Image (cartoon, rainbow, N blue to C red; front, side, top):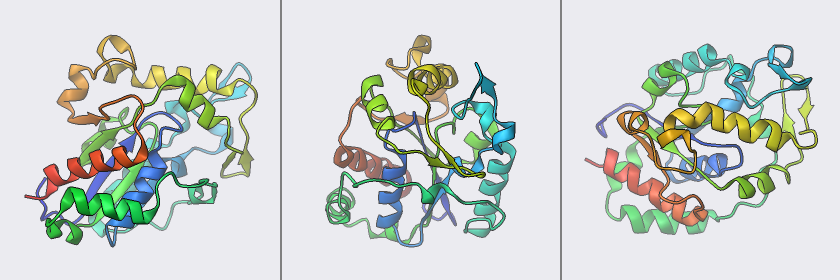
Length: 240
């Protein structure tokens, strides 16, 4: 896609607690006029979420209203703004202390992009979601496809420090052992097609490469390095 596009859709996907929202917020802070669309704002009502072994499973594809998400992406491409008919709730969730200050992020941007001032004129919509590469219609709308990763134990420790999540009906708190029984197995099941032999710790599959999905170069990457790598991708894709 050329840098002359009206708006550029950047998908940031990956397992829960891998840094998607933090990275998305940094990117929109660095590019004026850009904004975030959270996939988590497209959860179905709790009554329609699949139940597994008596527990509501928020971490499976059946929990997301993909047609509504696709409609929102189409609206954004046409109107360059967020649709008004979505019940936005994700920003109600606490984000904790950012691992990178905006001043540090600006310094990284200046180092990576240097004199490429034309990028500042671009408008991005950053789509943050844990299941962006499961629905073909969603994949097709994205101009840059990024996949974050992290080791099981790190993801688990991050997830289990969270207090809970805003929902359409109220607030959800993970029950005991929810990460190991639902979050991690759900991640493997919904992402195995993206990795060689279905191993989420392995290299990307040929299918993922054909989709031009960019996975971070290491399983565990500090946010400063992650932002630098992402800006390098943006520069390579849209600075021409």
